Amino acid sequence: KNKMGAKKLVLAVVESDYNDYSLAEKNKMGFDATGTGKNKDEGDGMDIDSDDEKEEEDEDEKKVRLTPIRGPVPDAPGHWGSCLRLLDPSNGSSTLDCIEFGENEAAFCCSSVRFHSQGGEALLAVGTVTGMTMHPFNHTTSHIILYKVVGGRKLQLLHRTPVDDGPVLALAHFQGRLLAGIGSTLRLYEMGKRQLLRKCELRGLPTMIKSLQGAGDRAYAGDLMQSMQFIRYDASTNKLILIASDRVPRPITCQELLDMNTIAVGDKFGNISVLRLPRGADARAVDMSGTRALWDSARDDVTPRLETLCNYHVGEIVTGMTRASLVAGGAESLIYVTATGRIGALVPFTSRENVEFYSNLEGCLRKDAPRPTGREPQAYRSYYAPIKHVIDGDLCEMYGKLSFEQQKKIAEKIDRNVGEVIKKLEDTRNALL
Image (cartoon, rainbow, N blue to C red):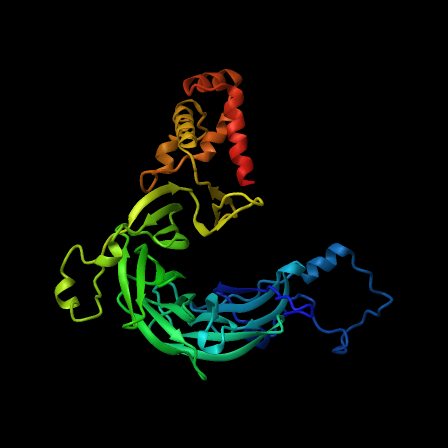
């Protein structure tokens, strides 16, 4: 809290760079990351130019000298440079504190967590992996590090918990505890004095847990290769139970929970999908960790499958998504970002009239809109899986670029005039922006 008693909002960011040395290793090599050279007070006796003879540098030269330099490149795989940075969003995202990790240790995830046993104080959990190589995939050790934000400006280390079951790639707050995705194991931790304490775990998930979210008594785990897993926590037996999984092998990159039974996911092939838990699937779930696993594991319907509500091919790797409203009082939309910096949105339709209007408009534009690359729009949006229950907004925006004769022809097909079609497009755009 600040002096006025209001809570200060800070942002924690983990940064990791593969095939790079840590800051400590660079300092040992004598590398100056700022490019400013030696301190002026530390002369070596070899300078022959006096201050009067030096010409003043212009602003461009000063900026070049202050630009960080890449530095030496490691000659062997498994080298990482990583840090944890605390930012102040209210001051231009200025850096409040920065913690550099050790040799070959990389941070891949972080999460705010409030342990009920500690009075609900907000702490920062960071998952790190040491000595990780890509091909072949391997690592040395993993840790979950717990920090405390002191005064909204400084990070204080509480303790480090070693993990030996795989790399820590996902963390999430869950019912006053910490939920961690460690390789193919989902584990629930409680706060301890010297390290985190294991409470329960679920082993045997497909490959590696890439993303995590929690709501109520459910956890939603995104797998690195095998899409989504819906998991329920049974407090009476202290067990994590798998209640549903997706039948389509999607390499998940990000996810966003829409409601308790519905989730939107993005994969590394540039697809956005919306998945839903079938009605009654939670009651049919079988606890595979008990004695029933011996008999029930051979059944095909042992784990219910998620239903695919929507599917849409963006064309770029989706790196993040969230529910948000970009205008005051507006309806929430699903905002997503891609690897190239593109920002897009999926706007939900609330009336049957809008669905029919845009479906008819899209159908007409598939035939009449120009194709710079010669590809059929529907085939492109169905590159990996058929497009389902999503209108191609980029294609609908092409209506305004057609000639007036073509616009009039399309408007007549959908029983509208040109002005009504353009106004409908503008209203939808203004409702979002």
